[in-house]
Each structure stands twice: as structure tokens, then as C-alpha cells.
Amino acid sequence: MKEQTIGFIGCGNMAKAIIGGIVKSQLISSDRIIASNRSEEALESVKKLYDIRTTTDNKMVAKEADLIVLAVKPYVYKTVINEIKDLVNKHQIIINIAAGVSIKQTEAMFGKKLKIVRTMPNTPALVSEGMTSISPNELMIQEEIDDVVAIFESFGKAEVISEDLIHAVIPVSGSSPAYVYQFIEAMADAAVLQGMPRKKAYKFASQAVLGAAKMVLETGLHPGELKDQVCSPGGTTIEAVTTLEEEGFRKAVIRAMNTCSEKSRRMTEDNDE
Image (cartoon, rainbow, N blue to C red; front, side, top):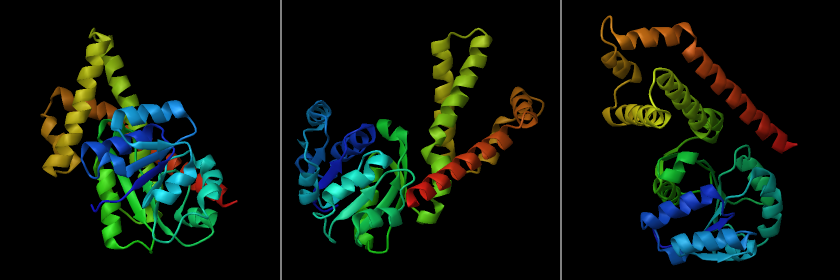
């Protein structure tokens, strides 16, 4: 990635995760990163951690950055964009990380055509295991898309997808850590019921989920094939799998993801109004 200045408007947990990934991977030098926030305390914290430049002035970020990450809550987007839109030019790249705010809506807020990338990172970015979708608009060239992918791969994995798939991305990636936490908690509760101390139960359950996910990613095998490898004939695992099927495990997951997707669509529609 060529030496550019990356600016962050907003300095919450996701912004910190992205900044941390960039700095730790040495994608660019820390003095080429600038972040703004209303809270000087928040800025002092991130400056101490990563030795970046900070300011309470969003306009300074807009003036200096080649890539601008809008790392604020969706309901603040319009306010922030109104503040900086006259300072942003066609050569800069706007990176949107908000749920429910489309490329079209972002363009409308700026009131002009710009290079815009809609992304959807998830919270495991905080431990450098994030998964991010990257949806660039038609003004982005391949080199610029590659630069954005490199930023998000500095703290996990990233894939370029069409924006019309965002309502599939949100339930399968953006929101799914919450389902996994529920699954881990349920498994730990069952282990505690069998007499295992709770702290150990969480460790066993969490490592099992981590290891299973790594098996899928690294072997390239179908999850069903990996499941079959664990299910010995007449064994304990097939008993558990059968019970999950009887209780509607798959159906519950699919229904939950469908409702998540529908909520995402409604949020986008609401922002059109």
C-alpha cells in the first residue's frame, strides 16, 4: 500500500481496532494516521496506544486524509457529513462502516459523486480476527480497492462483494458473533450442570468453537464432512447432533438470520425517508 494519510472521524472501539491493525501490521507509519473525536480523553487513549495524530476538529481530518473512515454511529452520519462535505474532493475515498447506510444514501448526504466504499466489519476485529465485507462504488479503481482490502485485512479477513449482498453479510458476519456467544454460554451451562467449574467450562467451549472454525477455514472441507468425521457410529456425538436436529437447531439459526436480514433492510429503507 502506497504511503497515504488515513483519517478517522470517530474514535470508538471499531476505529481503535482498525487503527491497531494498521499500526501493528506496519501498513503505513503511525504519523500518517489522524483521528478526530469530541472526547479529548478518548483521543488521548488512542494516541498513547498507537502514537497517531489526533484532533477534536473533524474538518482537519477531511482536509488532510486521502482515505476518510466514517467511524461514527449511523444516526450521526448526516451531521458529520454536513460538517465536512464542502471540504471533501473527488480524489479522496470515503469508507462507510455503518449498518443501514447505503452507498447511495452516503452520496446523497454529500450531495455529489465521490469514491465511496461500504464496509461491514464485525467485533472480533478487536482481537484481530475480524471479518469484513468490502463494497466499492463504480468510481473506485482496482488499486484503490486493494488498498481498502489491505486496511481491513490488517486485523482479520476481508472479501469484496456486491453491495446488494449486504443484507446477507450482516446476519452471517456482522451480527453472528452474538449467536456464537449464546452458543458458547449454553454449552458452558450444560458443562456446569455436569459438574465442571464455570471458568473452565467457558474455556473448553470457546476453544472448541475456535478450533472448529479454524478447521473449516484451513482444511477447505465442507462443514458437513467435518461433522461426519466426529460422529462415530453409535457414539456420543451423533446422539448430540440428533438431539439438536430434533430441537430445530438449524431452523432456529436460519430463522434468526432471516429476521436479522429483514431488520437490516428496514433500517436502510428508514434512512431513505
